Structures are given as structure tokens and as C-alpha cells.
Image (cartoon, rainbow, N blue to C red; front, side):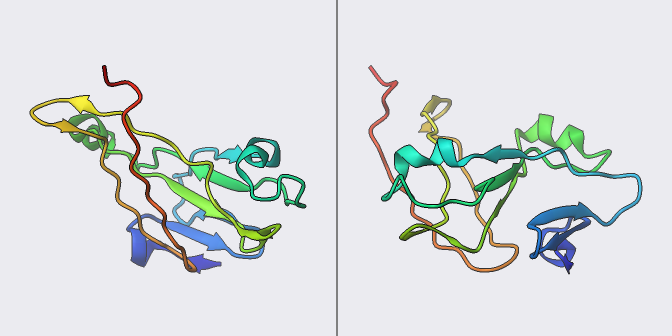
Length: 136
């Protein structure tokens, strides 16, 4: 197990053999992760017939220590952790299915900001800008 608390500030450890995240604090647990399946990923793969281990990746959403829920509500913050396998999907490295943040009107037209960090291992990020499909 690799202790991730010095990096992310949460009492979490990572097992690189099983890809599991575990709480290191008694009385506090992580939310159940969502999973991305091979069937969901195949339409966006270079080789849709590639052998892919299941699940492809895990998404722990809205992680928060007890007593800190007010921070999420007050500032609209959310902390998520995605866990990826280290293998490849055919000729590709593991990747997310991606997602889209539409622009919102506030003082300025903005999209939901995100901050990315690597807690264990290495990553390559590819961020794309698209036209806002919801804009008139």
C-alpha cells in the first residue's frame, strides 16, 4: 500500500496490485466508486476489438472528510479521484471517456474549472477546446 495522504491531504492509501483505494482512518470511508466498462470505452478506442481488462477505470466522486461538507456547498467544490490500470488498451494507453463542461453565465462566460494532479504514477493530459454545443 502506498500512503497518498502526504500528496492529497486525505487519509487514503493505494494498492498498485489491486488498484484499490482504501481509507487509513478508522470511522471514515471512501464513497463507492463508479466504474467505466470496456463496452463504454469501445466506441472511442483506436482498436475497438482490443482486449481490455475490466473495469477500465474507477471514479471516486465527491470525496470529503466528515465535517467538511459545508466547504463543498459554500464554494461549489468537489474532489474526485480516478484510478487507472497501468496496462494498455490495445495500441493505446488507458484514457478516460472524456466529458464536457458547458459554459455558464455568471459575471463572465466561464466553464467549470478543474485542477488535475497525479497522486501515484505518471500521466499525460490532453485537454481539448470545443465549440459550446449549447450556445445559441
